[in-house]
Amino acid sequence: MTIEEVLESLPNGLHDAYLRSINIDYAERTAELQLDIWIGDMSLDEEAREARRQVLLKLSGLCYFVVEAPDPKYTFHEAKPLWIDAGGESPATEGSTKLPETPEGAFTFWMFVHDWNAFIHVAAMQAAVESSLRA
Image (cartoon, rainbow, N blue to C red; front, side, top):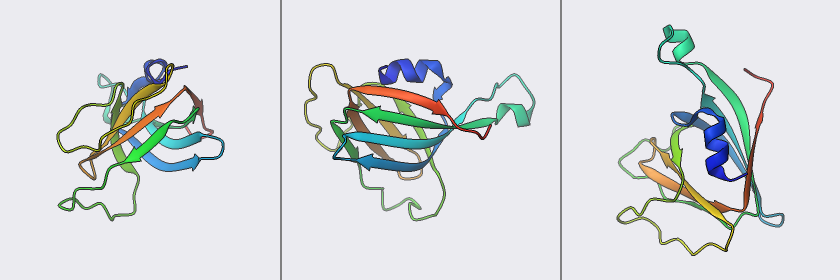
């Protein structure tokens, strides 16, 4: 699957998700992202609107995983999950890190870290998502 297919398979994509951890294996060219995704429905009561589910996003054929430095004006040092949004093709943002070209067949995507006012840019060949035990 591509990241676009994975995002479409989730109720709200990675909009207002929380990134808990990242595990990158450079030798195997894989990355695993532990996320709390928003599965709520805005037409329901407050508890149902804010419902979340923990998932594991697995990336294989990892080409790059670039984490921009946090904006020093933000409280980036707090120990908590990171509030993110994500999308397809990495945006061309002024002052962002210059990203390498990706091989044929690879997809790119970005995660904007609200807590840092910075991006994480990723390129990989395949993506998959697995639900965890916690609902």
